[in-house]
Image 1 (tube, one colour):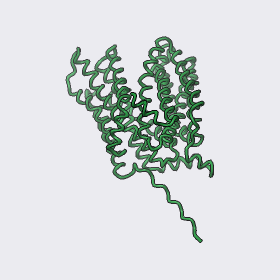
Image 2: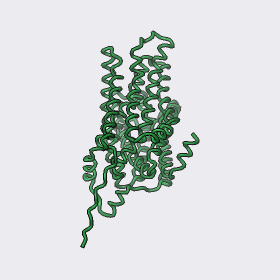
Image 3: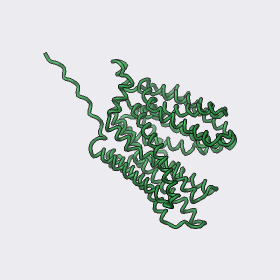
Image 4: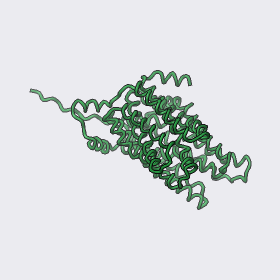
Length: 434
């Protein structure tokens, strides 16, 4: 831990602040969101479809507006979008805690999602710009802070929600308020280099900027190839908990085993991310590291696949081990694969953008992957249902394993054909000679 803190201190103040910001953002978000559905369905007594609608609006408003948020960040500067997102999330969290009107809850949910669409692309573009040549290492540290917030947030939220959900909402809003004040005072203003140039020589239209990204074929191919990584990593929240509860039941053991999944995922990243990144960077090109990361994520489902070949015990320690150990191993391997791939993934987006409109590229990338997650989760859920109905419990794990191999093969193909290399700048015309 001391070595990680020392590494953080070697970066500029802005980079250090962005890392702490991300920890605090996730702390506030995850202390509230895991308990929102229970609050809506329990004390407020909303129907299941309304709960799903409110939660879906948040996800849709975030994923659907990432491109807009990234575009605004490139045009207006990174700091204003980060602060605007913070303020919007404060409003959303306060509203979620204090109102019981369905229209107001939908608006608040949309506000919390839009907030993420505003500050996420701006934060990553800002970090990439100020980290410079040390982007890969910076994103590795960024992921440590990111996962630490995810790990601690639900624990704090569980304590506060045990008192009153409104206290959880107001505390989360207070965290974002403090964070906003700190950023207003301490975060330096930062604009994209291409935004500065356009301010001097005429600004390119938004549609023209979007067209330039949509014809960036290597970037689009890379974005599509990486969708599977997000589908696979999301299974820590979907397929793995469902498998634990299928075998371990809905009681205290099932709840504890699901908590272990999240702990394994978060703690392994906090303890191992920087070491894994340093090892990979010293031995691999970015394309190879991405390939190995995606392959590892695919193989993460092998323990669950092997477990399906074992007879299910009637009870006792054997059933507990079968319910807990294979999913925990899968969570660990998914975390390892993400540790290998994530810093190089974020760096590759910057390189494929040619250091131009970086936040907009991050925004479109997040939108593409977000749509992919939605479709992938629907298919995963269908596979889980089909597996239970047909008595073929191995089906979803085979599908996810093959998805990992397919994504790894796609990224490896892009790497071998040179499409993950930075674009070659257009040649400038020679000045005319007399």
